Amino acid sequence: MAVSVREVAAAAAVSVGTVSNVLNRPDKVAPATVARVQAAIEELGFVRNDAARQLRAGRSRSIGLVVLDVRNPFFTDVARGAEDRAAEDGMTILLGNSDENAEREGAYLDLFEEQRVHGVLISPLSDDDLPRLERLRSRGTPTVLVDREAPGGAFSSVAVDDVVGGELAARHLLDTGRRRLAFVGGPTGIRQVADRLAGARRAVEAVEGATLEVVETDALTVLQGRTAGESIRLRDAADRPDAVFAANDLLAMGVLQALVMQGTVRVPEDVALIGYDDIDFAAAAVVPLSSIRQPAALIGYTAVDLLLKEAAADEGFEREPVVFQPELVVRESTAPVA
Ligand code: RIB
Image (cartoon, rainbow, N blue to C red; front, side, top):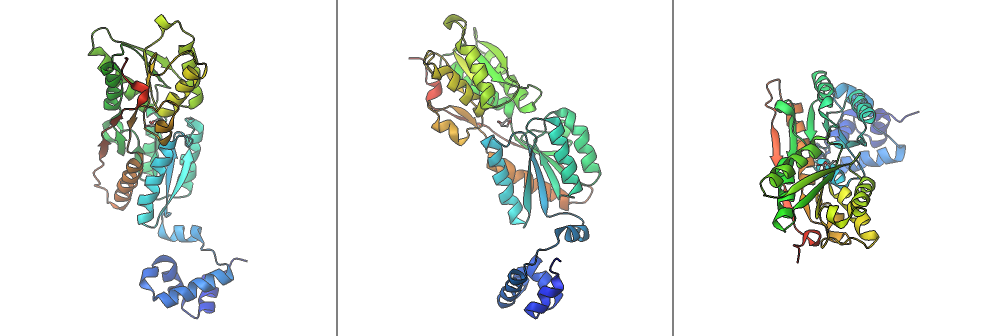
């Protein structure tokens, strides 16, 4: 039988209201009383009934966050930033991993709506998700896009300008003397991938004689990067690109493993390599990886801040796209050709 608030109040010789204050507004209660109530909670093994409290309050004190790939350190850094901002308001983050799979993404959106979360942050799989997110919001769950903008400003969003980021990466490769570039990434239905490729194309088009080929992958993982890297390694030197721009650092790590493991292709001497995100492993790679840095934790922090503002606002809330600028980080993997 669950311990009730009334039993805790009796054990601590205080009113039920005081126990409620200790649970929800401890700063309003004398420290000695807080200690006495907390001792009674511990002793009796009281667990607050969140479902009843959520029902009364109308909304949970949790925020749902759906990321594309929880194995990607970029998204764990986004989640950390989101947690930090949520904690400032005594709230928590429930993390869901869509794994770039539409069914899993939908299941998490259903779960978070049933849990009556305070709001949803999502890095959506594709634009096809937007009508679903519109319905979620129209039924009362505030929603903010993470890591990409919403077409037409339909949602608040926090992202980096990935077209500028892709252009920065490709222009850096061109500035180091490379001319036969390859973009490794996919599916191109993911907006982040499409934007980075568009930026790379823009940089290549501005340089006479430069070319860009696309090696599309099925996902943004190390394994897919290794497969793409192996296909590049097996080509004749004359037919091989002299530089690779990988859509994120996980792909770049996979390309690097495939190229250097057999010892037949050198990075950067034969093929320069740049990734995207600047995750911690980038600097520690066997050939320190150049990358395009995204302020991942700040993206997560800002997304929660926007969500809380929208959840607390009345009907006339002005939604805003927050766009951060990407930053080029140069390391050994793109050293100029000697
Ligand atoms: O998951 C896809 C990619 O988009 C991540 O690596 C990160 O770059 C995000 O912006």
